[in-house]
Image (spheres, rainbow, N blue to C red):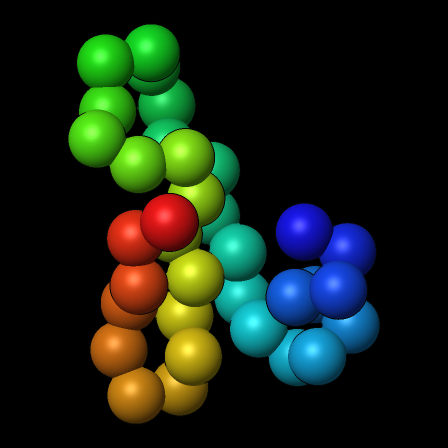
Length: 34
């Protein structure tokens, strides 16, 4: 997460435990689920 943040990406952590992903990353072109 630190490397993504330092690279300029916006990171969101979903609320709750039953999501299909751990992070959401905004790369400027769209949102990516990780």
